[in-house]
Image 1: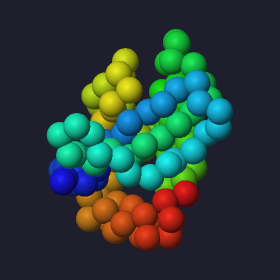
Image 2: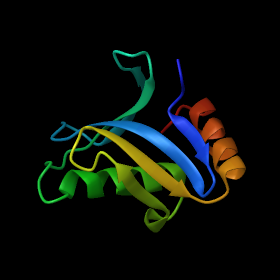
Image 3: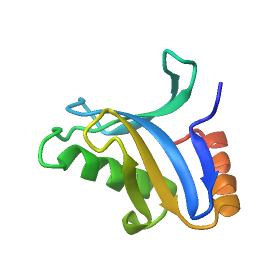
Length: 107
């Protein structure tokens, strides 16, 4: 299985499986897909219309990861539930921060 975090030259890519119109906002942990790849499972209460769910996703991740919302962008899957988020910054630093975040329970 590959993890949801992939270092790239300008930051870190994160594979996310988003559930819109959920009963609450939250990061629910890691979940494998049919191919065995791991995705970070996230739920938001926002509807998937007019980019509302994507905005709620970025806001939730920025708060959880203690970074600026402007450092996050959706680079793939804007209209799909499977998305790739780019966190801009130093890949090594970001990887260490997210590994620590996962160890602390990922919330």
